[in-house]
Length: 297
Image (cartoon, rainbow, N blue to C red; front, side, top):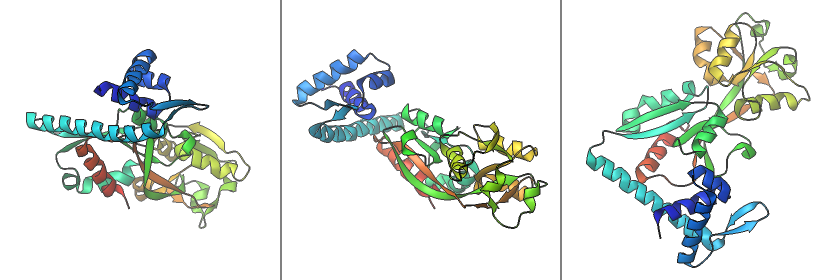
């Protein structure tokens, strides 16, 4: 039984497809199929069966692959141990962060970073939600911080843990007529306002679109930006409005560069930690647990 055979089988289980697993592993499909076949011959039972929706894991295969994930995690832990014994300066934890989340999460994390993640170097990637999911799926980051999205848009093999909730608010230029409102602004009143949006089918954009479509109307979209920082700058120019998590514009609101208003109907979004289902090394699992605890309400 070879380590690569286990890796290939775990990839097939994750992708529910030999073709997708081969693409992810950057090898031919025939090589994946052959190594999985050899593994099945050695263990004496099939790991997969064909179904109408692709490949399914057999009952015995599910138990075997669950234990296989644990074994892979142990091997990765050995790699960590060897690196420390060799004198590598620090461990690295790579996280992806959806746009607009720095103001929400970074103060929490860096308040006691040395105690939370001692000896760990953080690598932080800021990207749209769709890119965060892709980076996780391709194993280029260890975890992602993003808004909870429609399950149909979340790649298979990712799991989610809710961290906190954030109120969605209307942001406008301080001199915009809406800035004088004393009551929550009815979303229906925004029909003619030029609005700045983000990704329309996932993340904040999906939430904002639903505010309008639930009322049977379509927003007057002036521009679509892939990050909240750009959206805020456009609003500060006085050329449009936007609906974003209030906390993501806290600094600009405090400085008077933007005015935030509650909306009706009120809407909150869940901000969550996303990770791959398969285990990481024990040390990285402990880092992720510490990260989760530091960021969770």
